[in-house]
Amino acid sequence: MMRTLVTYYTDSGNTKKVADAIFGAIEGDKEIHPIADVDSIDDYDFIFVGSPMHGFGLNEKAKEFIDGKAKGKNIALFVTHACPEEAVGQLQPWLDTCKKEAAATNLAGFFNCQGEMHKDLAEYMMKMDDPRMVRWGSHRHMTLGQPDETRLERARSFAREVMSELGPPSRN
Image (cartoon, rainbow, N blue to C red; front, side, top):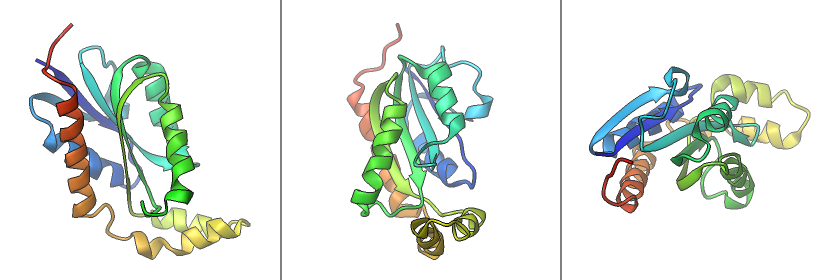
């Protein structure tokens, strides 16, 4: 039987909400743990790895996990960010960076969704010299309540789709 791990790093709880939704949609032998609690992934056939975006890419803890433990492993990556998904022109380069940071894995799927911008991050951004950062920080109110149920259902659908594409469970 296939064993699946859902692991994530979260600052504000956004990525954990998505991880919980993904975990709930997966059938079979599964576990969910924060990245900091995962010592080894040798006992898993497939891993969902979640991270908030930091500095226009994956969080450092998620990058360390991927580089240190997930190279050559079958994973699906999910990320949360404060940008609306429809801002594709702005968002796409950042999503591409996340995928590149997971290039040493066998990336079987990628999901992203908006999360709520943390109040401290918004305040920090509004004090920066970069007018774009000030503008993004001032738009925090537009992120409140994210990820909402619609986004969480998209995460569940993503998980089901990835798992169905893997085919019948098998152990090597």
